[in-house]
Image (cartoon, rainbow, N blue to C red; front, side, top):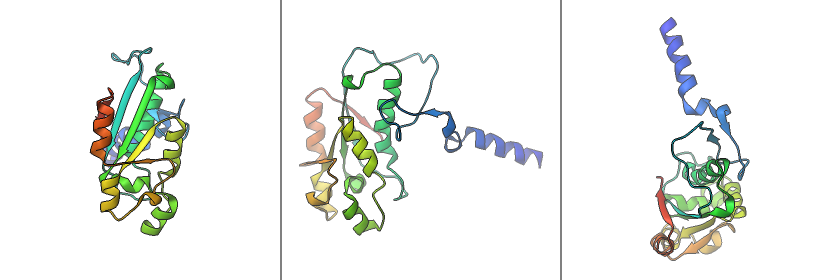
Length: 180
């Protein structure tokens, strides 16, 4: 019986879902993108360089009422690097949503009509826009899934395709990050 209790304690301590109190918020996003403070990492980004990054997101979490963790990764990236001395003005960030992730770009009315829920990503998309993140949705995926530009959040723009946005920004020197 003692072994079972010990195993449960170890699980609770090490399971990431139970250790959110060890994360820090901000400085860019106070309600999204919590990160762990790391002491003395061996590799950091250079503080006075401009970073151009395009995030490619085409999947979504399994639970409709939760924010897409892949979109939250954009906020995490920005918070963790800002905490380590990279200024917001030195982070040029683009987010491309396609495939299953296009539902995250819907306005609340369209999301509610389809899923009977408020879009849990609405506030995150607004916060990203406020931080000058450009968010695009793939028009091909949008159309394939039966939606139109009028169904989109005011915080996103529409690209002809995800491929179009990815090629466009990569030819402008943006580094591709795919977390799916």
